[in-house]
Length: 267
Image (cartoon, rainbow, N blue to C red):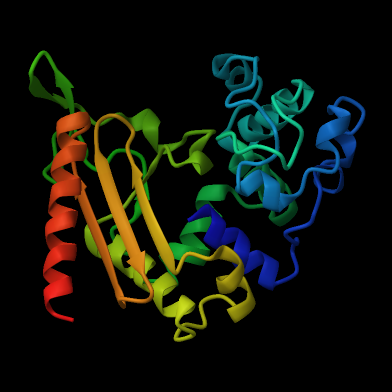
């Protein structure tokens, strides 16, 4: 979703895939590792910046330096920039917080939070009416499913946490939720874009993102989702559950495999 958000803003010339960290944060060039100055938006989002998985400065420290998520993301940028690269930029894929860095730039440039930008430019435009930030449910209300953690051979419910709504490192995927119908709308938009049937992004940006053939699985430990976009076969499949752990992952993958096998019989 962050890639899609950035792609739309590239279409509007707010930034480009080749915009560098030095251009985004000129005030930090003096403290930034020299190797990072030429790191591009493309490298940050595709996790080839060379940055380690996490900054050495603890999250509690960077969060403590600011009052809101926008400020905390900027503190993350400052902390990430001073650490030495784990690899030369562009030479190795290392999952890191590059999305947080790009999101922080957009927040400061557009004077809106990442959450506002995602809501306005993705959720609202795609009518993702059950998409939001934080826990899926509210304690004391029947408004969504609780998540579950696998402990001692059984699933244990995890109470909704109000603090989850605002996560400074959210552009790495830590606090967005949506219904399976909303997720299907989002994936279908990318399928149609790859087939030149959507104007949500420019044709050039759809080609650049290359999401017409995608398999992705993700979890926060208390939920699991697996998605497939197949441009050639003309379908998307998304399976999710409100539980984490190996058994949840296995169950989702088995359901996805069943659906894909069924679709093959219809060809």
